[in-house]
Length: 110
Image (tube, rainbow, N blue to C red; front, side):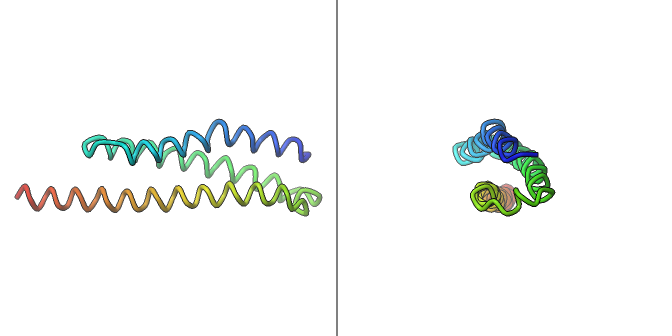
């Protein structure tokens, strides 16, 4: 696999998965309380798909000695991984808030 191949894979990753993931996370923030669980579920699914795709890219880079040494490429992959990690952390926080709100609702209801 060449650097051009990996660059194309990263571009496709960003267009097809990363940008929609960021949009899905924003949708969770904007969702009304009754729609939050569904929006959160959609964002988590998108995060999972993105992580699997990025893992494939990382494995492709690791298999090539020349690509493993390419700091620019490693930087791009690392930035993508850090972005996914940030999305995971945000979704974890949103899930905790959703659980907290549901617990509060249950306490108020009973």
